[in-house]
Image 1: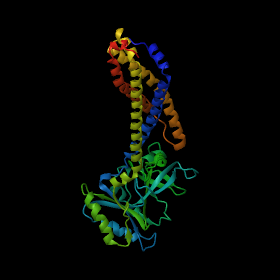
Image 2: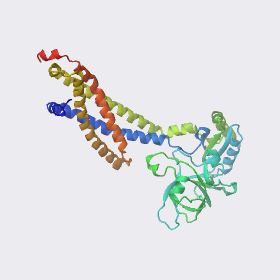
Image 3: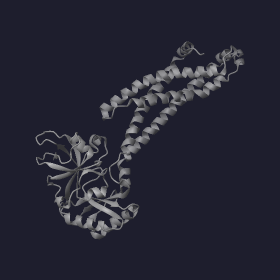
Image 4: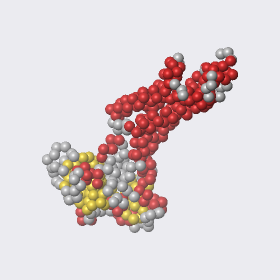
Length: 410
């Protein structure tokens, strides 16, 4: 059986190479652990559900020209009526924003009228009774708006609604006892209560940046049809007919009223395209971090192979002597694998501490989440396995050194 003491003695004679490889392993582990953690966060964000029936929905952004900025109510009604008559259309809603759009309204909400600070932050969607059927969100409790509850309003003078629908996340935040239905919320600085008449299972906010992570499912729907000249139409197609609706809906709007602008860029999009655009940065970051991990692991493996091969070349006579004294091929192979394992263990111990320190710095500088222990453990296991795999080929060459090598001059 191999002894650790002779291996440590040999490593002391090669301090420079040993330290360099250990530090390389440590640095690689620190970066890879944090990179994998970032990748995981980005992928979780990319796959977050919005609550919508995404494969049946498209969005059209339009702006009326030649009309007063906040007096487009009749034209919006005409658009909605025309779109709902199209073959393949289930329902349509005119709305100020929608999940992952990238812009919208937000505010604080309170349960106590006298509270100075809001209890939670939420987005505000302004729409009518067609919102839930169009989005396909699931109503958990309560009811939808009635048509007589919908009011038209100038965006500069939105009235405090008597009834509102909220997401479950917001309901649980405001009323942790689980009895939010029928309770009151105070929106923004309003002194007038709004009664929760419905709770939907999930409805994401329009933003997907890290700044909105703390309230990304806090949504509030107000029964208000804004009369702004700028509006968004969400259209839900019947199953399998979305592609046809994408072609006919914009053409119908242009034909109905040519005094409008539908942007070429992001003016007409399926929700799949909305999601693709919203998470473009996260997807790019995940790919970049993945490439960085592969490059670092490749460089580390190459360094281990190179150093082990160099040591094998230097020790050929010593290996031959050991073979002549009765050491088997397995003994020589185990020697080099154990030697590398000791270097690797030293490297991963330093690397684990460095990974935690790096994450703490990222937390303070960029408000990232704290690194989970499993990522460090997986990184440690991966680096140790990588080291053993990289050492295997040179170690096998060393095990094949014949005993006659002992009789050759250095």
